[in-house]
Image (cartoon, rainbow, N blue to C red; front, side, top):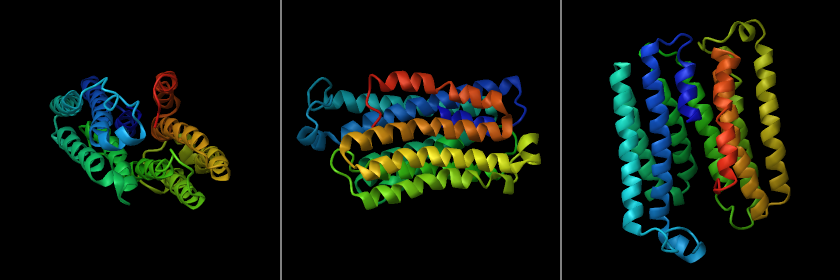
Length: 286
């Protein structure tokens, strides 16, 4: 939800009351389609899970394969429906169209691209489209800077995906270093916001160096955990690093919202960290 909420908050400094239903619906659509993608991933990974992870729901027979397919399809359908309702409230077809593009990318990733060299890029595209789903709920013109923000989130996610590719075995240090560099390109791209048409808050317009320092701090936080895993690429440490990197996505989204909407918007998105942390104690993040 953090991606689509950030996208919706980023495009407008003043949203009418009629726009909030559209924002809530695209946030719900994000959550439903993400969950549908997770279920669909289990469906397409069933043979590999039966061999390497027999305790997973489908191989352990806690969930049947037909039921998993049905759950995945229903979640994706519900997510698309929510997006089309958002289109009705926003007065534009773009939420529904963006949701269809996101579903197509989710299916392509889980069914074919996940196991190829295009996998990280496809997952990054899913996250970028999720940001644009939030942007699409805005009935007014959006600044071209949203493309930079979506690219930043997508690039960072591609780096996480590459970092996590061999998390169940000893990872190659060269791959982890490359993935770290790709992740750092996320805050690197966001650092360029003052050079775009983004409607930055007055503080950042007057002192853009503050924004660059904030992005540098984020980059250092990301680097610190990644470098530890590069030094000791055992599965446990790599998996912990990936989990923290996923949670840092929420912080990245909050920073982007802060740039144009001030602290209140950042706090709204950062609040999503609480359920994220609580759920991570019960469910594996990767």
